Image (cartoon, rainbow, N blue to C red; front, side, top):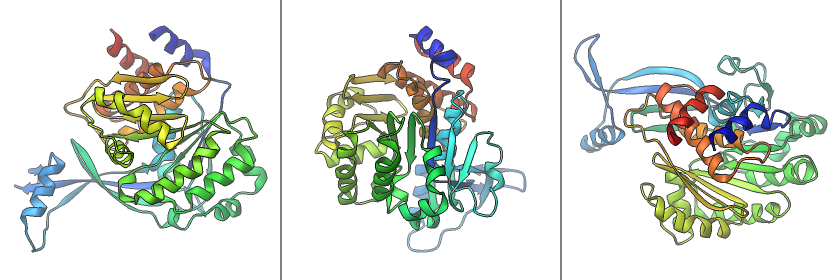
Length: 361
């Protein structure tokens, strides 16, 4: 398996193209103090639960504590997932919200082809060792429609950037006009073009009502008959999605995931359903059935924000060219995010392969 994956990343997909769209975020990442001892000495809230409990314990009164800026960085699906895939030599195209008049400096580090369609959204993030509290301001995405996309880019430019073997789109929960945007892209560019797969990360579907999600699946299922589609969700999103379908999901129980994931995929009508958790990754494919690949769990991650995006980036890089099996694609996704949370940055090809060998040694 290791040799097949190495061969894939050496030469298996370099003539293939991948495009990421359509969001763009500037992330302001903070840590929360639990105690100030002196100017230079303080304690942080390590666990998200402890911070939440501290807030709840304040009762009906106000709550005040300090925060420390950790970083200002790019965020969102396009930047995080696209960069993770790009680090694995995929040379992606980014179509996203990077700035109208000029590209925001946080995106200027990218050497990829950037095509901006609006100003970026912003996200306030409080980061803990076991998770993060994310408070996005999504005005740019909320106002963005299929008509906005056509106004931002002429038809010829849209056709050029959507001329890819895989088109990866995020986030459903931030775009009220998501269904029209996807339908327009599929009907006008993707179904009759070179695209062989559309990949979705819907983001936190728990904050939306199940009726909206059902309407989106009703929109996507007929399109899936014409172009295969993949939906990737994390453990929390999987819990919500599975419960919608009358099934349960325990993110520490791979046997339960294996039992239910194919049923859920068939109910939503898509070609692939992928679930990534801190303990395992699960996948169901119309052609390859079901696979479970265990994750190399990390007790003390350096970073957690962007872990799911890195899994998706690795999975997409492994999907280009169509040569790797479902279990191999899941393994690459796990290896990519495992390296990321331990080191604080997305791995390049060799770093990912070194991490992968720890799974199969």
